[in-house]
Length: 118
Length: 113
Image (cartoon, rainbow over all chains, first blue to last red):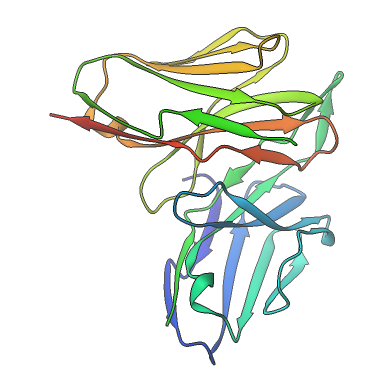
């Protein structure tokens, strides 16, 4: 619907498992983001990639490892997670252009992956 | 500290009624403010985006206002429908980078038949 797809939509994993979340955007954007959304908390920015280069790592634990092979694809590799990591993980993309003196960074979100860590 | 606060935290109204959601922010410098609608288990979808020079913007039955002097915004929903039930998130973009957004916690909005 928004041009950003995420798989899987739901994931249940044990603390010793290794899994990966995938995000793909079909909007021709150059920037991609990972967010964590926990109940009753604002969205937390985790990682930002701009033209495949990581420009932001918001003090995320090393058990979360992002990968951006190209501007259209973004992965989040998960290993040895904790139950408190259970949340909705959202991917977003945007272009980074300036119109006049105003910077627009309209972000388009995917549907999210609902992650449960047992 | 850059923050976005929304009120109320939750709201229930009858179908067909109007309502207004509030957003106060302390983000500086300011670039733009947007309202997102997020259905349960889905990603946020943009409703409106306003720069500091815009006072009001409409999208169908949704009308957003912005007062950059008092750093307040509101989202007015007219003739609410059951499909309006969702979380509404106020997001402010600062002028210090293309990617930095400050999110509110959202207002959980339920329309009752």
